[in-house]
Image 1 (cartoon, rainbow, N blue to C red):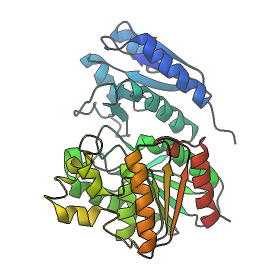
Image 2 (image 1 turned 30 degrees about the vertical axis):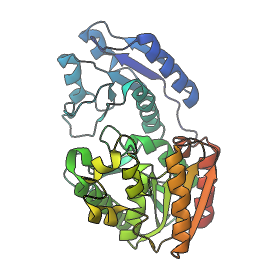
Image 3 (image 1 turned 45 degrees about the vertical axis):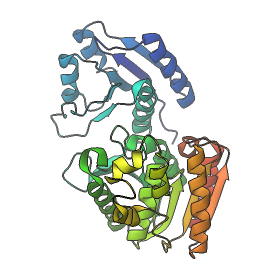
Image 4 (image 1 turned 180 degrees about the horizontal axis):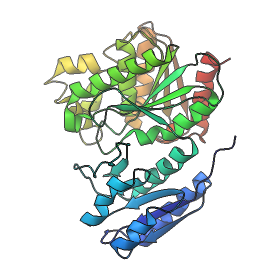
Length: 360
C-alpha cells in the first residue's frame, strides 16, 4: 500500500523571533524533498494559533515565547512542537498520557527535522515502548510491511555528539526505509550525558538493546550514526546477542577525538573528562580500545564528511581487522548526513550490504 502524503502546515506563534521568509524558504525545500504539499502561516494571535493546531494533516508548531501558546502542547499530542532555541524545560505533557514531540535548540535548521518527523510519523506510524521510567527511555518500533515469523530486528542509535538538543527523530527516515525492506526497525531514545551523565547514557543503550533482543527473538543488528556509531559498537562489545554492528560516520577514536577537540570538546563533555584525566572511562567506552569486539562490523563513511571522522573510520577498520574482527569498510561520496538519507547512494549501498546478509 502506498503511504499517504500528508499536507503539512507550519504555524508560527505570536512573538516568535525569526524571519518568516527564511522559514518559508527552508520549509518549501523540505516539502519538495519529501514530495508533500505544505504552507507556512504566521498566527497573529493566540486564537488563530489555537485554531491552526486542529487542521488535518501534519502540523508543526513554533509556539515562540507566549505562555498561552506553549501551554497548548498538553492538548495536541499529534502536533510536532519546535523551539528554535534550546529549552531545557519540556513543554507540558499531553493530558491523556500519550507521547508528544518537542524538538528544540537546533536553530532554523531544526525546522527541516520537524517537518521530516511530522511526515514520517503519519506515513508510517510507530509504536512506542518504554524501557524505563524517564521520559527519554523509550524505543519506537516499526514492523515490516509483510512478514512471517521472526524477522531481523534493527536498533538505531542517533547521534548529535551526545547532546540533548538532538534526538531519535534523526533516524526516522532510516527506520521507515528499513521497515519497508523487511526489517523490524527500533528507533531508540536515551538519556544524553549533558543532562544525565555518561553512565546513564551507556546504561540506557544497553537496556534498550536488551529490550529489543528480548522482544524480537531473532537476529539483532545495531546501527549508530555519528556519536551513535560509538554507542552502537560499544553495545555490540557488551551484548553477545548483537550479530552485526554498523557505524555510520561514527566517532570511533574517542582518545584522539578528545585530543583534537572534536566538535568544540564534545567527547570530554560527554564522558565527563579528558582522556588523560579519566582513562578508564575511555577504555570502557572507546570502540578502538575495546577491540576485538568479537562481532561482525560494517563501517560506513562519507568521503565528504569531517576529515577527522574519515581518519577515524579508516584507522578503526584497519585496527579491527588486525585484531581479528570481521570488518567491512564502505567509503563513498557523501557528507555527514548522506549516510542517514534513504535517497543517497551511500545509504542504499549500506542497506544492500545489510539486506544481503540477513534477508532472503
